[in-house]
Length: 158
Image 1 (cartoon, rainbow, N blue to C red):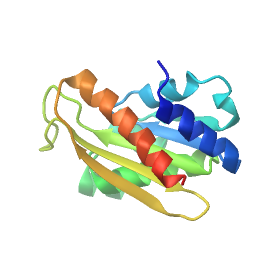
Image 2: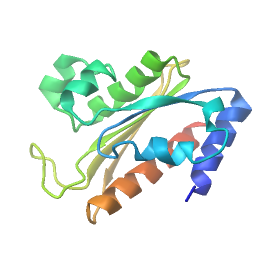
Image 3: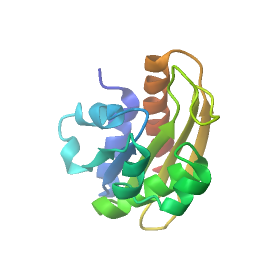
Image 4: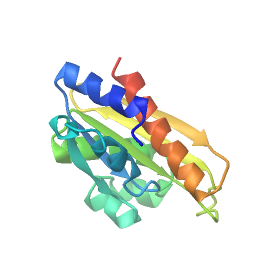
């Protein structure tokens, strides 16, 4: 079911004549799925990458090896680099990225529910970040992450 926030994001992008690309780790394409449920989304959503592995965060989303080695795949700087990188690589005005731990087990010292969201504007170079500490099972964490990421994007498009 399409959420109001998804329709709002697409409406704001359309009004501005701007485009969006996504880089998703723990959500595994859920954000792209929510966006493409809306008829006409292709006018403003150019696509994205499921960067589930650390290696794909580098090759598809443009995160430097130095950042990944120093900070790892679950970090604010990684999410910021993913958002900026996917916008650049897809020639989109905006990049939206998520990375974190959905569970059921912690990852590299990061607890289940630690999530990093980032939105990058390719035109201005500005990148917004939000950290979430979520509770619940894997499905709940993934769903809350997707909706929270879309909300962060909507807030950035005001």
